[in-house]
Structures are given as C-alpha cells and as structure tokens.
Length: 225
Figure: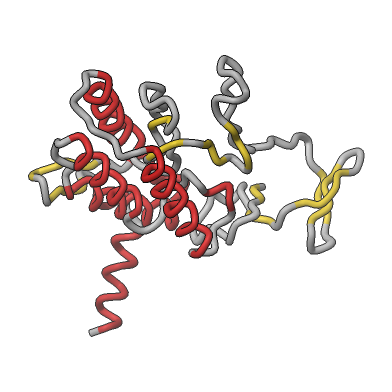
C-alpha cells in the first residue's frame, strides 16, 4: 500500500501495491484515511525526505526558513561571504551532471576566475528567482526546486555563462524528459531502462520493449492521425 499527498501516479503497480489517500490518524493496529476508510497494517514507513541543517556554521551566517537557505546567489554562493560555496542545494534534477557543473564553477570561483555581481545585485537576483516560484503557485519550500519543465537546464545555462564554460549537452534534457514520462507511467520498472548517448543531440534506448511511455506516445500519435 502506498499513500501520497500529491496527485495519483498514473502508473501500473504490482498487484500487492495499492495507492490510497493520506491517512489522518492511527489506531492500535490500523490507519484511518482521509476518506473515512481504514486498513489494518503491520508497519508504517515514513518517506519524509530531509531538512537542511548546518550545525557547523554560526546561526548568523545563514538562515533557513521553509527550507529556503539565505543569503545565496544562484543557490550556491553566500552573498556576504562569496568564498563560502554550497554545492548540492538544488533538488529534483539530474544530480550528478549538475553537481559536477556546480563543483566546476566553485573551483573557478576559488581560483579567482569568476566575477560575481555586487551584493545588492545578487540579493535582487535571488529574490527575483524566489518570487517567480511563488507566482507559479509553488510553496516557499520550493525555493531550491528544479524539477519542472526546463528550469534545471536554464539554471545550468546561467552557471555555465557565469563560469565561461559550455552548458550540459541538450541530449541530457531529452533523456530527462523521457525518464520523467517513464517514471510516471512505469514506476516499478523504470530503473531497468538504459540509454546510449549517440551525439550531443541524440540518443537511443537500449531496451525499448521495457518502456511504457513510448507506447503511450505512439498510441496518441495514431489517435491524432
């Protein structure tokens, strides 16, 4: 049994897994769901994620409110102390490629090869980024969220421009979009799908028979025709 606060995942699960609404309370041996139904359970596993914490820094160095870390420029550089750099704050993105790019930019910054804006300009840029998320209807806790549309790749282009290096290859965005579709429709088996990058703008799936999203796209194309 799986429960989530977000919308139902449009995927086919194994018969022993069932999506249910969030539970609102627990009894001695069961959980009661928001729709009034209940279910006997042996165990409850809370997949709550994590919260940012920097106990090794003084409290006046950074502030954390609703999972927003301040004052950071481009989710990396401390605005008051630019040599204090955070690599790995953004979430829900292609982690390893992006974090490699962030580490590369950090190294260039520490080597004196990156010129940041003034403190006032960095604060304004950080606030504009945050306000844009709120205008999109996102909660404050999504201050460092990168997982919608092409946000993570626009962010990567900003880092690349700042560091004077090439951004991530377009093919990575293509694969990301494919993976997101597959995860939504084929969650139990999406981790077995392998990709082969052919060029900066193309790739192939090595085991397409395992894919569900591609079948759905093909069906939609036929319907449109």
